[in-house]
Length: 247
Image (cartoon, rainbow, N blue to C red; front, top):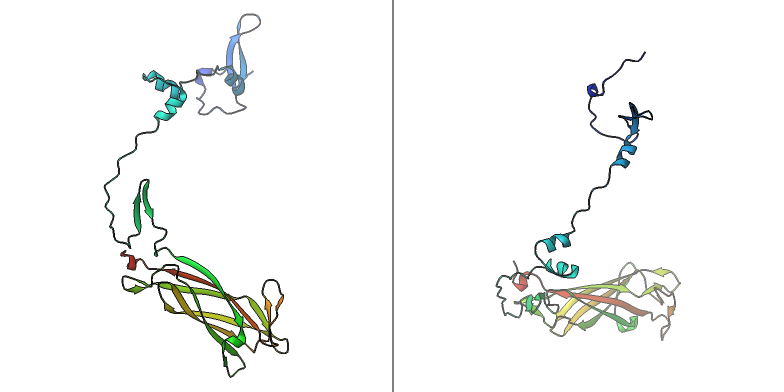
């Protein structure tokens, strides 16, 4: 015999979970009340959906506004705020410029680094040669590039210049042995129009034949053993923050 348990004496549930079962009393087929079981899913399906709330557009109309949804969207954009008063220095080295749509950084200003690329091409006989005791040789020359800033100094301080360079050729010696090469460039003189630099190529041995680094094709010389020289050069020029009045 099963003991009867009053529903009212059961502990309350804290969370309804899927698969749960609830007791429910309702008239049976004979009209008398009977107890049945119902799942949580069945109970949820019996609950009618709630009414749809008002949209933001409908609330906007209820507030006394008139217009289409496009008018409502346009009303969400407020009026432009008033900017603070700003006085810019008229000095030519000022980095900022005021235009109709706001402040701009002058792209032509030398504080923004400028890059200028060029190349140096000749034959080794056209360069000065220096022999080293271990059999290495150094070929020296000079080259000039355009000064992209158009000034040689700012506030009595010289502009910053730096070169990056690489050989366009690899080399073989007289006996077809591989010859390494190091390329160095150092700024020498600077004018408002031109930057001149010293160039040095340090070979581990005397170069006789030159080959293009990328295609592998030989750069034929006018005379046997007078290897061609080709250097790609990139100049970076600019000024410092201190030169432009920034601490």
